[in-house]
Image (cartoon, rainbow, N blue to C red; front, side, top):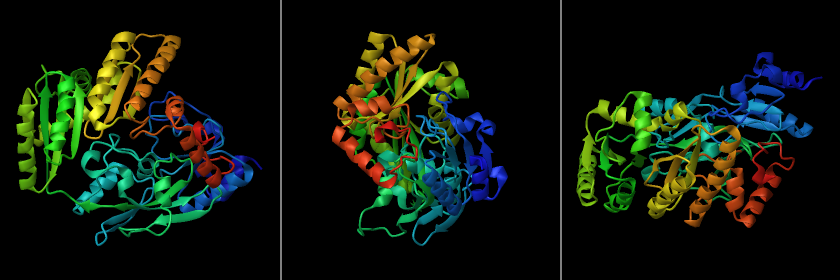
Length: 458
């Protein structure tokens, strides 16, 4: 019996198992669409039981499995490079429970982030993790430990995962964690699964922490004559103890692309860089914190301090900020870079980026989360032919990641490693750390059938 027919028997519904020749391209790649794989079958699972049966079958027959959710990743984490089975969880998309008494929610992995956030906010609750791609799935956010703009105040996805139900490589179903706030009852395995990019398990249920919805939110716009002075102001902003929810830094050059892409505009177009902040909490507290930042802006040489009290203007500015990768991609192929450095090294790192840009002629645009040191770069291909682009991009990427590690940084702040970052992660990682990761992989997936294209775990 063929693989597809065996899977159809397991699932019990032929329409939810597609053979390789019928799989649409979107399921063979990531959101950029440049890294592409092949698969023998695509399975749309609807329950934990189905995921367990598929994994048990794959384990017994040594068949590679690539789990995926909404497919919005940027580093090739969902590209099936070893054929096998694509296990799609997007139809496991139910919000199973919102427990207002314990400030928790239980959801399936295919629930879309923006839909979940809107739902809990309608109940007066709040789910803070806020990565740039709002159409990502909750399971995908957990698999990459997604961060986003609110991390400076609220933390990242990991901080909101109370418990996980997962299916291991052999089909075993386990639950780690619960609705309880505290847990010192043995190893916190759920924290091992967060950020594991589908290499250790398949997430099938998520217990999430919620907080009360803030009464008010206000964005504040600062303009600076250059990026260095803007980034250097971040230390003063944090030290002012104003509790910003987000602190974003943006170069004027990328804003111009965002303006063209969305039709929106930024104030103070003569500036070279901007700091965009948000504050949330009760109305009085928000107002006081925003006023503190006005004093900081004056002391740090800001060209403009603008509280965005008009909701339409605030929405327009955040829309421009949210589209940068897509705006750059509309002009030229580019390589999106996500890395993180200590917050006091952000300015030094951006200086280095401009130094490399000047020395190599490779145009790079910088923006990111200044409050947590998460730097995003768009490396622009321009008119380079394929061979030149691959060669020069690889050389520049090695320089950029090496310098980040020299400054005490890491290869990824929120996108994960996937396929795209393997050479840079591997070159800069501690060999003993890699060996420990491999030992964990061997223990949980001895036949290496789960997302084994992430080569540092081979």
